[in-house]
Length: 138
Figure 1: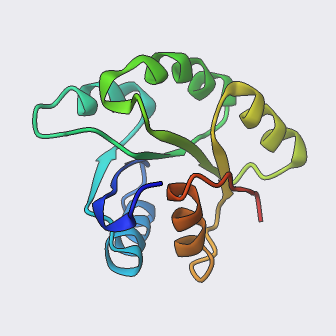
Figure 2: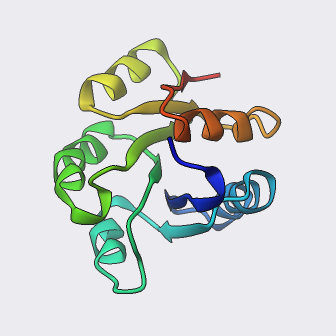
């Protein structure tokens, strides 16, 4: 269990407006300690390798189609020393039952559908940080 006030979250999101919504909710509604950004999966390792970035507790990964590209990175991410204890949670607008199941089989630790439900999102993050599994496409 991770106290949200000590949590370090990394958000993989290419759209500025979407990132700022997630960042605002994380910092001001939930009160996480830090929120770092990677614009895409390709630059994620570069972001993690920056000396200023410490251990990450939670990765919120906005996966896009084709899903296989993001899924292929997952085993590499699991081996990164700054993600050893991190929860990796997919966020995506692809909310069909098959998408959720493929995400689970790929090895993600949870699923949050987009658009985010801003009233429910803080609770979802708190549950994830409390070691609960959240699989909520809607």
